[in-house]
Amino acid sequence: MSKKKVNFYDTTLRDGVQSLWAMFFKYGMHVAVIDEMDKAGYNFIELPVNAMNGKMQVRFLKENPWDYAHLFGERIKKTKKSQVLMECLDLLDYGEPRSIVRLYYQLAFRATGATRFFYMINTRNELDRHCPWVVPMGREMGLEFEPCLCYYPSPRTTDEYYAGVTKRLVEEYKADAIWLKDAGGLLTVERIKTLLPAIQKEAKGVPITLHTHGMSTNQGRVVVEAMALGVDGVHTCIPPLASGSSHVSIYNAMHNAKVLGLEHNITDVEALEEVERRLNRIAKEESLPAGVPLEYDHGVYSHQIPGGVISNLREQLGQLGIGDKLDEVLDEVVQIIADMGDPIMITPASQFIVSQAAINVATGERYKEILDSIIETALGVWGWEDAGVPWMDPNVKDRFLSHPNAKILKEQYEKKKEVMASEGDLKKLRSGYGMTNASDEDFMLYHIMKGDTEIKQIVKPYKSYSTGREPLVQLLKKLSKDHDISRLQMQKGKNFFEFRQK
Image 1 (cartoon, rainbow, N blue to C red):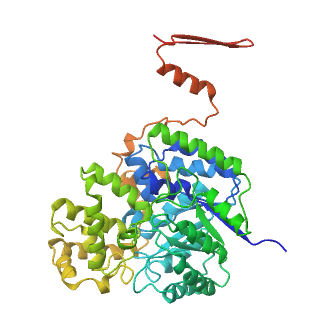
Image 2 (image 1 turned 180 degrees about the vertical axis):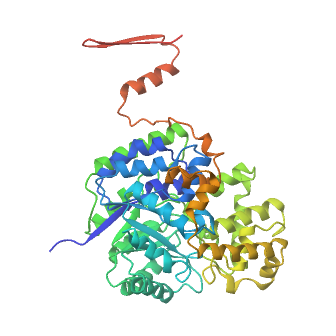
Image 3 (image 1 turned 90 degrees about the horizontal axis):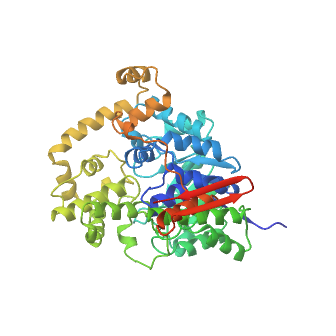
């Protein structure tokens, strides 16, 4: 009789980077590690390919996101299926016609060779809002559908609630697999013991994968309990992009699977260790942090900030010169969650609430300045029940909706709904940009960036990063820093090399 098996998925390049390095991971870094990652035996490698990442790569890294997509398509060959995180509509720009959304994902999946798309069932993507056309769109591209069932604790999100959503995903949308996505790391052992069986019952054999962060420090125990309960897969990261607010280390997950008597899919541990060495070298070169297990902080169950948001929050508070106000911002987040009816704290609601909390702290007065996105939330732009709209504090909601921008935003939303329901005219849009003869990828990047101002700042060739297998390069770098050595000669056979510096 064969042992039961758990499959490990990798999210180092996407969620590990987002959780610990504030999305700082350049093209050359991917080149340095992707071949070794492909050898390990993962069922899936999650890729950082969506419009939001594309904006970040152009704006902050000065690189072309399509180069990333093609790199993954060309280099990931052994992994069973590479995958793209498919966020819809608003990660391009809320209010896009369907032809734009369809073209973007056709290009993304074609470039990467991905075979499965993810879709987060949460505040903005409730089942009746976008799934009726998004899921068929993915099916038309020949893709498997893996919805992300987003966990968050609230009086409304009972086991029965999640079982009901699972039933609809399986029966109405024929999900090929399901993520149980715990972005805030808020699952406990006690809750997973009842929640996972409730979901498994309604999944009726559809594979379920656990995606949980380390914010509460319960992550390791939750993963073990889920594996014991028969979860089909677990998302992991490779150190130094594991632990902390990121995901469980692949090494820890493999160890605990062995203790439980489970087989797994990882076949080349040496490849993982080589990736780890290279990532540590990159971290040192760029002064990036290594993930370490956190001390228990009960506050995470109050502010519920996802692991992929907290690193960006720290970074941005520092840029604003109020890095010392983090605790105040976290307290403010708790109050805003209560004001807004306990919305699910996941993209985009988590970013909206965290940003509003930072503004409240910076101005010294709650809601002195109100973000348009917060007003839009009260209007129902970003969902309804999971967005907390019916349960918002009436006085706070009235304050949002009486803001001078509320009427304008409502009118804009009504127009955007019409656009989103339309097919749109790509030829007309291309012509308006003066890009009739441009490639689809160039056209789409121009559209995402709203012009070519930032695109023109892309600089090539991109910076390369050492794999540790270029000894001469490493030697020269070290010699250039040692001014006591002015000359070095090396010879091997007929090959002669001389190094000099003044």
